[in-house]
Image 1 (cartoon, one colour):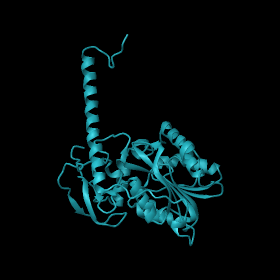
Image 2: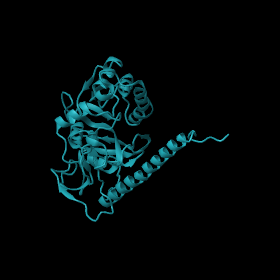
Image 3: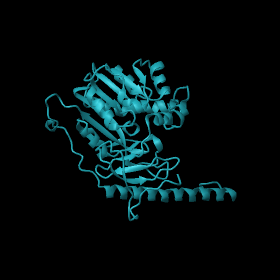
Image 4: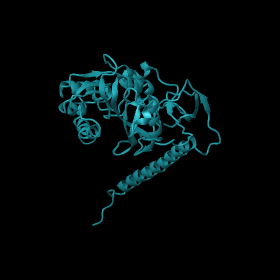
Length: 345
């Protein structure tokens, strides 16, 4: 990652660029946040809505090839699972998440019995199985074949279909307005697709009036732990780097009423996770009349985001330096015949 450069607040000028248009607000005006390298995507930030996204964006073919040939961050990916099933430990973590987090969020708003669900990113089907046991009818979509095979052949979920991220906005439904709930709580999705706007517009169209959308995303401004030098070093996997405010704006601009959008205190991985609950308005019902709709505020300015990223990058450098010093100390003590850490007798 030596060639990755995140714009710092100490720089006098930030390089402006004209892109083909922001997926969220359609503005073509952006500033470069990350210069690309052989391992990272160039990233820009929209000067109008502060959406962070890869530019130039990968083609559908290039994105599919990346997930088939390189991607290792999912236990069901070809590089991790091969032709086998994902590891037992990862499946158990998925089951715990479904039992103790996802289903509880859904049941706060709607009873699954006799409802039609569309699940994007079912993984191995842990939540899908719970929903079916609750009496729901579920159609599931999953990009990684090892996950989908486990859902079908082990959990017995026949309505789980393989679909690459590049075609998530083309999932197989016979007609619009037939789904009570769209669930995307198993794993974040918007950051991985070619166009979050196209996907959300499709989800809006398939929902019945009054139907619910449940969504999980990561907030790039709130890392829990860094695996790389910069919080933005995610490579081609994340075509979009989302925050609470850009996610909320996506939901609203595609027609949904926003009921919940906040950093969930019970859900984190490498980043804090955003829990989103939204609703499609009833026919003839103005969105502003729905009593539970929330306002997440205007969001941080462009300068605030740049300062935040600068601070995250430099504090991470300090942490890496401490790790290197600790490892060097361990090696020196071993050469001297001591075990590390030293224990008192």
